[in-house]
Length: 334
Image 1 (tube, helix red, strand yellow):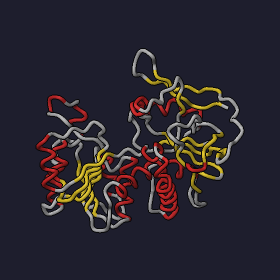
Image 2 (image 1 turned 45 degrees about the vertical axis):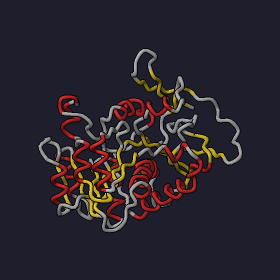
Image 3 (image 1 turned 60 degrees about the horizontal axis):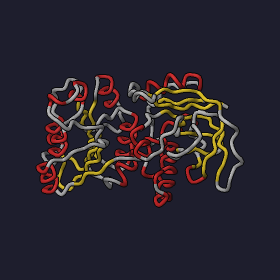
């Protein structure tokens, strides 16, 4: 059997994807099962995290969000098997039953963003009915699921759009989003729009998609245009609010910390890999996976999936995904 792997160049940071012949799977041990893969979603690989966790290899398996007979789940970070293969070996603690109404591609394409949305809104910011939530880049794969989860919990949702197409997509949401802020022209002030929408009180929860840390002269043009400055996030955050950030290098100066202190606000970092890095939280992790599948079956989650692709196109497609050049979730169908 062939599987897809990535290889880092020894002379640069460039990543290449290659198909490699795999040896036959070893005899299944206790608590391990063989999974016949029916679909595998593609997500960007966090090479920096792998390096920091001392998990770099000559060839690292690609594809962890898999659905198959009879179970589906996210392969752990240290899995030696690529999800982009016909059969994988996986521990039962990383699996959850797929409801009959959910297709293979829906299961694989939703499970990771579902876990991220739950981690951000349920465990890190304690979402509850009546809360106001700002979800940046709401038309992204994560943003879509986060908006649907927030609506399901009875929250008021505000979101940003990075293009006219994204804006039109967000305006079609049911139930409707309270306000869609178009940031594509770089002229809209997110903080002012949020304060206006909340009557000057600020939002209770912010889930960002990255932030600007420095002055205009020190940021790349694209990042400057689409992302809010960290001061904007702090300004629009309400008293007792929660800021969940995906910016792993966030730097807060003393005035920033003082402002957050006065508001009694918190900052949390969204790293969904923590569930796979510690077995202490295994029970909560399985509950999240199960709930994601149930909400997918009930129609609460309606993921933005691209057309499924065959395995032989996975290499080229993964190169595009790694460069952040795809908006909808890509799923390989076997």
